[in-house]
Every structure is written in C-alpha cells, then in structure tokens.
Amino acid sequence: MKTLLGAILLAFSLSVQAEKPDMFRTVVSLQVLCTKGGPELLMKQLLDDYNEKPVHAIDLSSTNNSVNIQLYVTENKNNPSSTFILHNQNVSTSCIFWAAEDYLRTLETESLPAKVPTPQEDA
Image (cartoon, rainbow, N blue to C red; front, side, top):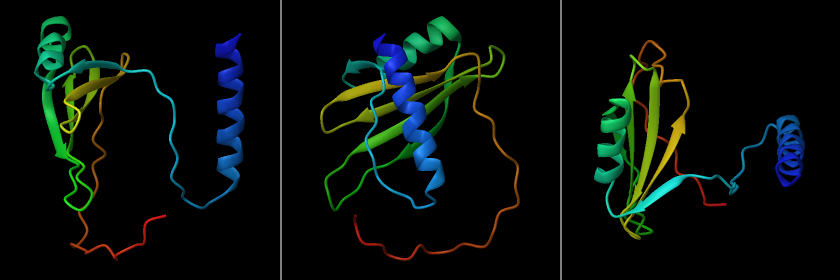
C-alpha cells in the first residue's frame, strides 16, 4: 500500500514539474546500497559478481563549501550492466545506484568550442 501511494505521489509530482519549465533544486528519497569507507569494497563485489570494472570517474568536490564527493561508473557491456558509485569522503561512505540489465550509453556528438559558465547565485 505504501509503495503504491509513493508511486502515485511521485507520478503526480513529476507531472506537475513537467508543466513548469523552470529548474529547481530538490531532494528525493532513493534506496541505495552503502558501505563505510572507500568504494574499493563495492568495486571488488561488482567485479566478482558481475565482471564490472570502473570505466568513468568524476570528482564533484568543491573547495568553497568543503564538499568532497567522487562519482564512479563501473560497467560490463557483455552483461550488459552499469553501476554508479558515489563516495563521500567527508563521512567516509560509499553507495551504489545500479541500472538493472542496462548499461551506460555514450551519445556520439560533435564537440563544441570551449565555453566558460557564467557565475550564478545560489538558490
């Protein structure tokens, strides 16, 4: 019953948001698998169970507000499967988000000239 109610609420909130073209910040509830420490334990488990290896990494750290987060993507195109690992060094926790029976696809596109983003105020 709770799951059905949650799904209805999510569908309603997404349909309301779809009507509004403005961007906004929000926090959503999402169930993930986490472990204390670095992402190595999760990466080893993904390698052992699914033959997934890390293929992408991005540092989402920020010096102005002490955020120290890394995002890793592991995948095995032969399964196919992909997993996203978010590691927060500030609290020494790593969590995985997985895409069941799917894998990350790179959209081939022409690179545009470099551009510097304009500064924006925090909302």
